[in-house]
Image 1 (tube, one colour):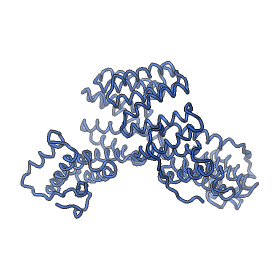
Image 2 (tube, one colour):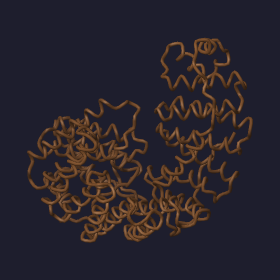
Image 3 (cartoon, helix red, strand yellow):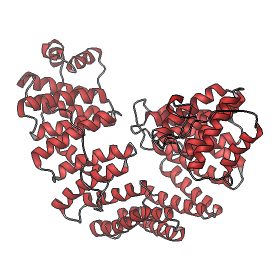
Image 4 (tube, one colour):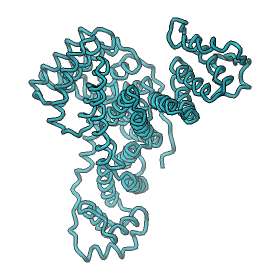
Length: 567
């Protein structure tokens, strides 16, 4: 068995172009296809065979004991039954711990993974790995591939830390088998980078991708899809790190690389143009951004047609850039066309359709059309509610990030209209989705917790509000630290405490908030700082002890032990 090993990135953060997204998918699918292509015999179903399956004592082990029970209760689909009968036949022919049985366990595990039954998939893949490891050794390719499948299922099931550990073990196994620069090692590194990225560590993710990229280039050269995918991903990571200039340079190269690999008229080139456009928008060059986005849209109309999914994405991008430069009228026209495309192609009740309603609603709110804005948001909320009812509990939506961001905008709009109950419903749903996501974005979780706290204050439930604010502060403390965003939520705590009559605690909180703003370099001209100062000046007779920063750590008595600070 392979011992638990943690990945370490000890290479320097050089400027090799590399990253995390689509290369992983391409490589993963290729391997999955080859693993499932083995020509196993399919056993026909008959009563005697089912009866034999029920009697066979070899099926007493987990997970096959569960399979036997399912046969008895008749809870198997036809496809599932076919896999189980195939497994029964292999056990009868070769014995329970034979490599041929492991092959069937792998294909059956893949079936359950595709059906989102991750518990069964994981049990089957773990049993297959145990057989391969015992019979063939840990460094046989089948053992290594089986280990990779375990990691993928762990990740799909949301067990991110366990998946990270297993991916790291797989890297060491593949390196021992194939060498450090082999593309198959790079494939696993891309998975590790994906996890690092999801955890909010783009720099560490970039290091892993650069290692993968070196292997890809060594084997395939520069003009290969996996190389292009990796280069594009590193640009995405630089964007997340806030280095928009470097990202912009790489995106310009990606456009050329995609054209060289796929041809100038390929959709991949248009998609690269969209990303390049957004990098210019991030740099404040909206005219260049708009020109590139329109170029991508025109090309996509020819490539996909007016109703294509990426065509709609580019048109929506045109609208967003118009909104950024203050041309809200043109933005709304573009969004309306996008809405019509998505209604036509995806249906009235698709999450992407709902997200477009939200985008239109937000823009209408900005141009002071509150009634129309509220109508759009209610329509979107209705679509999301229906979508939740129809979705399986274990099913993870590809649109989940869009859904959560949209729910936040819906909540803000309801709050602006005094619809606090509806706002709370939207924010609560957002919080539930964010906390259950594979990669929990603590900063956005903190944002929605703060929003719920504000709603609770408006409903007069100040004690509940403080609980939400406190949880938000804990999340902020572990990510961005005690910055201006942290201070804004801490100020909300003070307001709630003051409403509860706990004046001394409230003003101590205000004083700590003011210290944080000053450390951030914000003066009295800042509206948030002005609010805090006005609160303190209104009650000059309140005397409080203010903890002083020690070793660079700013105090927050709500979270800290007061004994750590001087007063």
